[in-house]
Amino acid sequence: MRINTNVSSLTAQESAVNTNANIKSSLEKLSSGLRINKASDDASGLAIADKLRTQATSINQGIDNGNSAVTLLQIADKSMAEQSNILDIVKAKLIQANTDTTSSDGRESIRKDISKLLDQLDNIATQTNYNGRQLISDANGSGSADAHTFQVGEDSTDTITAGTINSNTTGLALTTLDGLNAAGNLTKSVAAEQQTVVNAAITSLNGYRADLGSTQNQVESAVRNLMTQATNVKAAESIIRDVDYAQESANFNKQNIISQAGSYAISQANSVQQNVLRLLQ
Image (cartoon, rainbow, N blue to C red; front, side, top):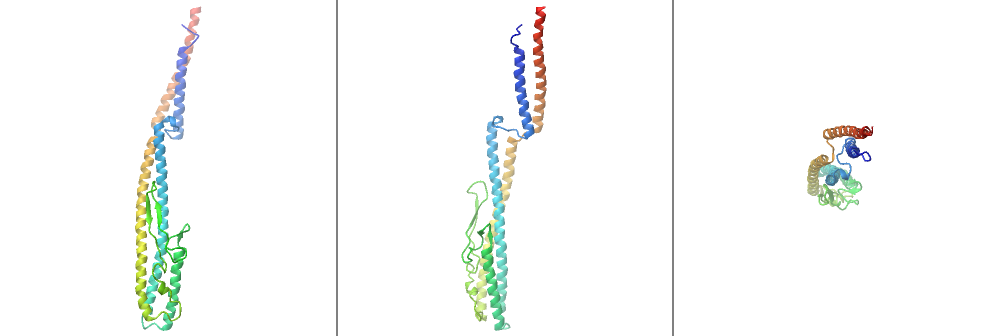
């Protein structure tokens, strides 16, 4: 028997060190809720999980972009809805002016009302913006607003575009009606003629609103699809990264039992050396 080097004890100690490392790793997983806390836990799994996390983050930003786009489109649509109400009133006043039961003084009052209404139509056009971006007209009220492009997805090519809108007296071809700015300009014949102009303006305005509505439906559909993708991607990441508590708890208990058994083995290996004393007696 050799006592200078207690090989049995060293072997038991080595096993104890490994077991304690396993216990530490298990506790780290149980406390963090993650199966992968560092690259050494699962190098390939970490790479895949991180890529999935990046994808989920990008998709969620696409969802936010889409929701913001819907808000922008709704602001534009509500503003044009009010412009539509204004044109309805203008049309009614032109009909009122195109009848012999309305006097010249009455037509003059109607002309003033129409002038104010068209001024308000242009005010709506210039004031409608989202975060400083013009939506239905340029800031001068005479040109069109720029087209809007929204990235609704994780790739730069995942875009949806809303076309240009020119919803002001110039863009709706109401400049002649808006130019009746002097007394006596609104006659019965002018009132009859301008009804056709207003009808065309209402048609153009409805066309802008229809295009916006179609774009909004497209964006909302894309957002719903992205939400489904985000859920599935997060689920895939969870399978790789998150810890299974039932499995890891069982593993921790196993390692804990092994650790206790290892401590007993070390004590027994050390006590074996005492047998040498009997040989010396």
